[in-house]
Image 1 (cartoon, one colour):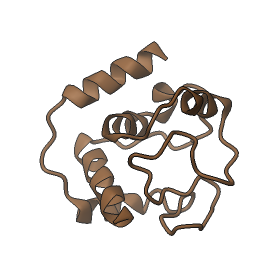
Image 2 (cartoon, rainbow, N blue to C red):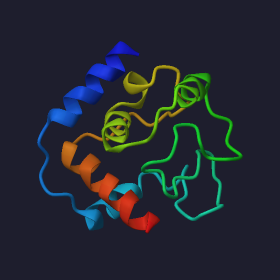
Image 3 (spheres, rainbow, N blue to C red):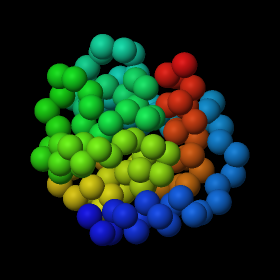
Image 4 (cartoon, helix red, strand yellow):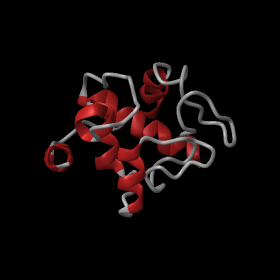
Length: 122
């Protein structure tokens, strides 16, 4: 968990260009095979509707990994920094996650997808 904390701090301190939700929507296409943004629609991965600000492991009807359940029980929330770290390298950010995606390659794509996730929750 120390590695994840260090990654969170690093990403939070790294300046990123302006967020582009339109590009974030394009980047999100990589996620659509496993995740839905439509409220109440489940797929292989947890539903991501209104994920920003939601408690970790907080989507109903999804069987989270022990690592995510533990983090959620500690009161962790999917804020921008935690999402950025997880989207960059899920397995490093939360060892033991079931997420099989290797991570997004650029900080810009990460910032853009977070902007898109926020926009779609409104």
